[in-house]
Length: 557
Image 1 (cartoon, rainbow, N blue to C red):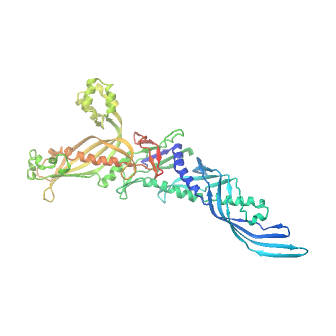
Image 2: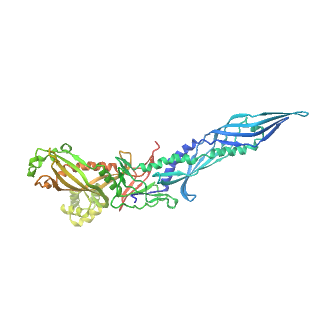
Image 3: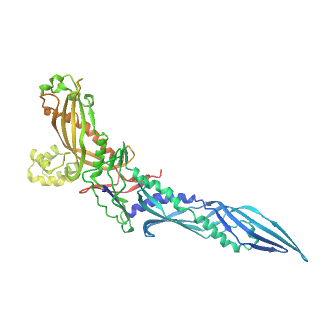
């Protein structure tokens, strides 16, 4: 199963590298603390006139390292195989900088003095000294290798860094002026000190450094599916998992679907969406995402499970309170006369969760009407504009019945249908609508109806809902509804005379809660700190899924 599939092109990968990885890593690299190092130096002697200095057991310890003027800049990202595994290699280059260390040296010193003709004295000592050590470098190159995968044991998407590498250039040792090394020809030791100092700086544990930075943000992908109210979407890998086509981009299959209170949604036909084609290197979009209607079905199911699509209406909740007063209907239904002084409460529950389907629909928007005005005779267009403008149809037969009913000739049907037809996501509702008479009886008298309702999802857009989740949002445009009497506990009462009550005391309230469902929307997988470019996203409905071609933005706040 995979209800969401994603393709990320080179432009998107580079955006992530430049706006998150590079900036964050550049900041971390400036705070590098070079590792402590020991410098081993062989015994040596130096002579000054009649005095010989024998130095043995010399040890030099570099500690408390820090860098000054170290400002690495991101150079590039290369996708490819590293040790046979798909990976991303990031390169940084720092210009000249210096380091600061505490230099501690300890050694045994024999000071041997020759006094002619044959007197020799030996004064032993064990000096200990601390100095400031400030070596310089002409630059440093840093390479960091990162892999992207799903960690099933942690149930999280992760980026992990392999062993990083660094190479310092042009080291200048700057051996402390008062070091015992200056009693000897320092050229013997400079190379060794340079190498040790460079090793101290370049042996930083880049792996831990990078993993600390990136794992939190990547693992946040799972959390982006949390809608609150115990509704959580599953953004673990789908059937196709994670792919790196030709090491030039990323393709991801995501399960999608939702759970409520830990119980997973299981639709009738869990989909396997195809993966979007890899985006060309020249494509300026960051990603292409396919979203199945299964995601909307999971949303309506979860809302149904949570009771968020239920509705209770009292007379004070509707524009005309008399609509929910029994006295209003006594004249057309004698069986209601015993209850004429009572009010009714309208209760809306779901017989089953609303379900969606992608299909051909006909919508008479203002744009469609403007197009038809230039294609139809004025008399025909006026009939359309006065009677059908703003309507939505989920079937060709319903549209043609309406066109025929207002007197439009069949010869104009094809032109009208061609202008109005489009792929749409149609929602079917099956609702229990019960009127409860508010007597003191137990149980109270009830009148039960079944309401079927058809909507088309329109005005698809990306946005942020009240729970701060980034979601695919929509508006429900009603096509039709039908209310039919089911049963009543009132003897000899045919409740069909009250079928119209749904339109007066049910439809508007139900439309309101469906509007809230649309504002909540279907969550889309994304990392913390990033958000979709809502204004410029290109959304289109295909035969079996919604396609989203979009860029993302990085919020560094």
